[in-house]
Image 1 (cartoon, rainbow, N blue to C red):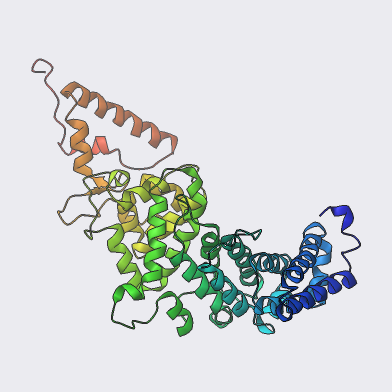
Image 2 (image 1 turned 135 degrees about the vertical axis):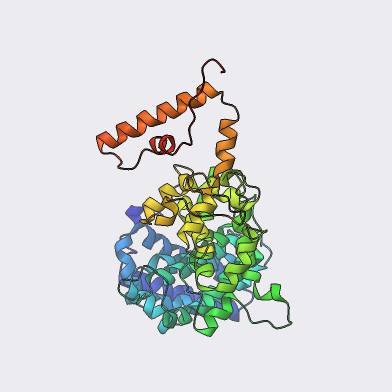
Length: 442
């Protein structure tokens, strides 16, 4: 367990010998029930030596791949394992899968995704053995880390110029078992003290690697075919991911941001690629199928207001971008609707980061609501709502001073070249919309 002690173990001969010993001891435990506990403990010690050596001496990790150490780990997992043995197998795989070559061998030659999925599923509902060093959730977390390594390092074959880094459909099918057990884990595990359980965090990260459109086996993982006619059954994974997302978004705790982001990004892919999912979730975020333009977007009730408040956080980082992506996808990638839904003041940072241009129609403020009231694209609220509220508390003299101030401001901006537009105050005066106030009557 000390780096100075690993040099002797960090050789091809030592690692090969320890793995062979672990497999022999595991086989002995299955044959001789009297010596089973001793053999399993000794097997675990051998695996611990291998895992610690790769952890402390990274240069020996390629040796594990060269001697096909994953073959031995795969055989041990297939034979049925204790919590500690499964944890150590997961740790060895996680540390050793660090190149496309090693990932490709594990997937194409060993069919390791199936073994990992079966092992994880075995611990999903298992009660913890308190005599063991690791809990079932710790074991699942370690096995998911190995599964994540397979997803990350397996060749992507992403089309040139594509911004989507999901696995290609042909490659995703080979990792199908991992996707299925990840979605089952998200569905089954409850929140732990208000947070995602560790295996669920790994599971949502893995789900991010997969497309949702095709082929049929992948599509049916995300959206199972209706078997009993129950619509909720088809959308059980979508609804679960949305529920986790909405629950975590509703809290003000800063520590939840890292958990919200991957959930939002998975929903973005589902909403973008599946029109029926987009329609289903749209009515969850906007229940009345219309935005309430009488209130500021961040003050609106429900999840829509919550998401705008999260998106506008200056230090929001990835979570602000992910929520912006989700809302834009939910609104059918229509930038005009997006600006009116969240207000340009709230969306400006996101749009700048994503390189999204403001449509001319929004700049001219010609978007109208169903009541023919103009919507201020900056605030996301009816223009008359903003003007009436501000003007109602002003005296005539204050209104005149404000008009003069705006007139001077626009003249200065035009002269400096900062903007080149017609002065709206001058235009209003020339059109006769302003009346000079009689000082005696005021």
